[in-house]
Image (tube, rainbow, N blue to C red):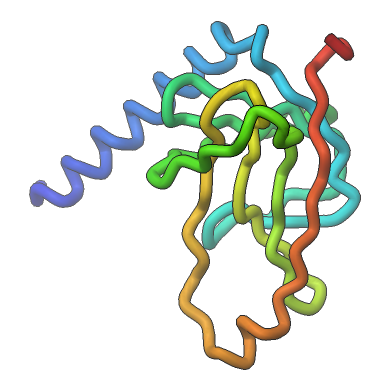
Length: 141
């Protein structure tokens, strides 16, 4: 087995373990919101419109569809540091009919996450529309 495969397997195991910990221990910081459109996280999987729960432990964020239970981890490599008055939200970059998660704003609850934009042409960059979906504390607290 080459070293790159071993490294990726170790990272994947850490993500799975941390995702379980995030689900179990981050209930007090659970944010929820309704995303009214399909979207992707990173370069792969498309998630459907629906109600989502957002939680984190350290640098690992978990975006979970509350209807299906399907969850996607987001490893925060570039923290978003908002102000105390910033409202919690999911921020999306949309081009035509495709939206991609760009940032998680945690508001006064701590550092959020910024996801890197994919490489694109100047013309594509000029067509980006930013959509913001507000989040609230689970249970209305």
